[in-house]
Length: 442
Ligand code: GAP
Image (cartoon, rainbow, N blue to C red; front, side, top):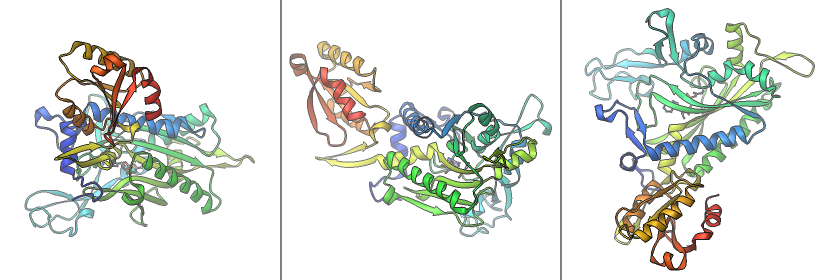
């Protein structure tokens, strides 16, 4: 299926990611592992840019937020309290004929196998949490789970944060970290995997007296999320859609959920979620742990805070950003593939080329320029192949600027800077490069 805007297909994205060092099939030398993916040098950089910007914007730049980094393996009581042991499951059925397994809520006809047309078994609830054992003995007493959401690490540390940071409501706790789900039908590249990362905020508010009280906070986070998606370079107006998740389809803890759906090449699918989790989680943890997780109002009355939760997947962000940035353009007789990432997202900001590899004076000068710029920006030095080829390579990884040192540089002290998007070139004095890029890449 094609995304109409820029003709991107999943085949093209997967192929570019492999070819250019963004994302590789996991454990490839052993034949891979289905639906596991490894991030290559540019993919790791892209992912880090996303996570760092999210942390800066939503944790460091806000006075009403603090950060946290909780353990992945938590006391199993956590999952009893949160309801994940009882409720975090999908309906699973198996084809009687070809033995394929499916989530029946995703089938058009839950009785017929979409693979071979055989008869499907009756569905059973399959819990999505990854089970493991703590210590050497694999006994039920030692069972633990890999967290299926980062959120619970925040709830169980609510009191620690209150006691140490003394924040005033409303305030939020943000966290970035791995989550694990034994998905029945992972797929669509990094869209649905069993191991992924979340960037989550639990934003605690006083007990709402009226619906309007929590709705106002929910609305402000809805807007924040849209601003974030714009910053990522997504065409929010045309490619992002909000789905108000109906009763009966929301997670067990949610009174209201909006799914932000994105037009991926394989269809309109959930990118992020925003949920009103009420006081469900804190109350559950207080009940099971016996620890007081309330706050007091000015009159000293105790109450359990309510929670608004913006929940973002890192890998889905990567995929949406790759799809949005992908462009094919006709340049003379050729087609150039160019990743038009917003500058802050681009894995490499500046590529530095000596015009010719076999001219030591050009290489030496280019190296000096590269060494100076790499103190402030992620730069790449490339002296391989002709300049046209080097431009194409940098276009494919989305490098905003390419800088060439040529014979004029040696005489006049200026270089050619080429803009990724316009392909326009201009001469810039070496001593002015610092100011030039500060202006362009700030
Ligand atoms: N704490 C709330 C929560 O976990 P969710 O809708 O189940 O809610 C939040 O997940 C986000 O995590 C999703 O919107 C998506 O971005 C990401 N996500 C969930 N499952 C995923 C998976 N199997 N693979 C990749 N990302 C996933």
